[in-house]
Length: 62
Image (cartoon, rainbow, N blue to C red):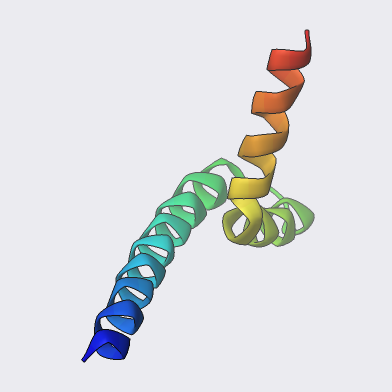
C-alpha cells in the first residue's frame, strides 16, 4: 500500500505541471507573430520553470 501512495503523489504533480505547460503555451503563443517565435514559444512552454529560476537567480545576484 505504501508504494501506491508515493506513485499517486507523483502522478498528481505531473498533472499540475501539464496544466501549467498548457497555460504557458497559451501565453507564449498569443505573443508570437512569426514562425520562429511560435517555435520558440513551444520550447518556452516546456522549459518555462528553467527560465523562471534563471531570472530569479539573476535578480537576486544583483
